[in-house]
Structure formats: C-alpha cells, structure tokens
Image (cartoon, rainbow, N blue to C red; front, side, top):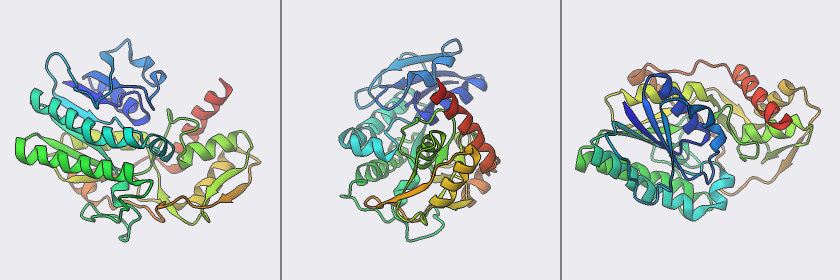
Length: 310
C-alpha cells in the first residue's frame, strides 16, 4: 500500500511509519517539524520512505495513488499546545479537514489520532468510548481537547456523508524512545530529571492517576485497527493504573538516581484520573498490551541516557 502519515517526524508518527515500512508499505511522511524532529525519521531515508515538509493546515497535494492516510499531525504535550494554542486548534480543524479531503480525493482509508483528552477530567472511571467526557471548552487545555473533539466530529461526518472508510483511535498515555527530553509529559520529564539527579517535579499531590502504554503496543493496536471493520472510536492504552508519584518513584529506582520528589501546584483542568476501558479493543481487534511497564521504562531510559550523553 501507498500510505501517507501526517506528523511522521513526531514520537508516535515515526514509530508508526517504521512499522508500516516493516510490513512492506510505501510511506509518505508529511510534517512541518514544528514539534517533530527530522532525526526521528533519518534512519528511514534509505527505505521506501518519502518525506515532504509541509504544514497540513494548508492544502495537501500528494501525487499518485494513496491507499491510506494516518492523520497524526498535532502538538501533543501540554507544553506544546499551551505554547501553540492557535496552531493546535488549526491543525485539529483545518489540518483534519485537509487530511480527510486527501483521503476522499484518493478513495483512501483514513485514521484519526484522537486522544483520551476528549474525556477531559472524567466523571466515569475507567473511560469507555461511549462516555461523552467532562471538558472545559474555554480552559487553557481546551485548545487541544476541543480540537480533537472537532476532529472526531468531522471524521465521522466524512464517513457518514462522503462514505470515507474512517477509523478513530483514542490514544492514552504512551511512552518510549524518541520522546523529547523536554516534552513536558510525565515519563520524559521524570526521566530527564532523574538521569541528571535533579529534583523530580510532581504537579499536585501525586495521587492523580495515569495509565502508561509502551509505544510498540500502541502501534500494534493501530495496525489492527487499520484492518478492522469499524468506524467507532477505539481506546488504545494500558489499563494498568498508577499514581503520578508511583511512576516517578519507579523511574528514580530504575535509573539509580539520588533525585527527590518535589511538589508544585496542579495545572488548571489537569485530569485527576485516567484509565482506558479496552473491552472494545480486545473484542474487535483481539488487542491487549504486552510490554511490562518496567521493561518499557528501561528501553526508554536507555534512549534518554544516550541522548543526554550525546
């Protein structure tokens, strides 16, 4: 297949592109490198991989046939979308519209990278795909939450009105190599600080929970969803729930660091708990995460250590 991946130079986009190449597909990566890194895809250049530097909020023109479009372009960490609020809204709206327009024009399948953030600060736990969420549309995080909620709405509109074969994946916290050192999300933030023996910063009292999925498990789920006969959203994430303090303490021990935990105020609208109900993924995709947390963290630590040493 000839496949377009927007946001291909990002953390997940680069792993997805690599997995598609491993399965014999030709991949066209599109990225404006605003939050992506060309180093993430440098090793793909001698394979059936083509890179186009382009902002998907403008018309996307791809020559030749396209069989499938993965729309992964978007700032994805709080640091990014709080710094780039307008760009985040534009890539979720205009960018998704353009990516869907490409899929429609090429008679291609389409998958949207949505997020557990559509559930907001959830009042239902764990979160099923049928839950509509508890989102503050005008809070500082609303630029990301509402961009993704709009993206889901227009994706299903293209499915219902134009007949585009669309998929929606709601991604829960994912970690692994190629995350940025100063990404702002829990795992890279804690690892960067622990590897430097600096204080590890926890926002809030550390009792808020998250579920952490290793990137190879996520990509496996994406490839299964690509082939599935469903247009309904599907949660992909690890249902093992940990407090933020527990994940920080685990990372400090794995690194062998002398870091101490320090606490700062919780950001506005930061979710208190987050855990996916993956019944739909188990049933439709025969998918469940396989990589143990400690195993995944060690692989990620090794990557971060090399980055810091380099």
